Length: 196
Image 1: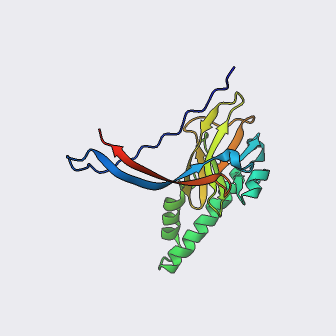
Image 2: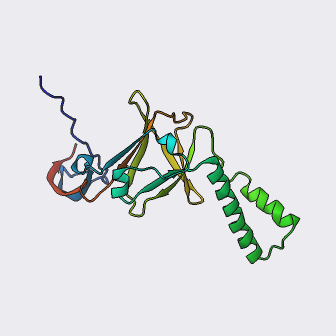
């Protein structure tokens, strides 16, 4: 039995409309960068039962090799972050002329009341990725099904969301990373490309 082959990658390029008399494009030249995680064993980190690590950094050889730190914040850590941010905003307000008192307290409450609000299905994490290696983050459930994770940053922290599905205790966190070994660049040149 022959092994199934992966379909070839397809790239679509949009060009400006050519002169109506043109029958071909003389030359298209460029460079393409391919992400090939199989070329580096440190391309993918899988952290099993990652929810058991709430409150402390995740440990994984591939994360460490790429100088990436990910820590899921506990409710107490989130509250400590809120207090820290509130104090930073208080200092900024006082430097801009606000006086201590009810008006300042009211303004700070208004500005920070919805700060770092976490929905039940979301996680709030601290990510350190100094070399910007993270390519993609997903959850993998107990059946092996991949759940896409949407991320957004706020006040130096990152929200992980699946828009409704809460990560379970037996799920994995899978982080794909770009490295010097798994990014491959190729130059290409296409000549006399016929126009439709």
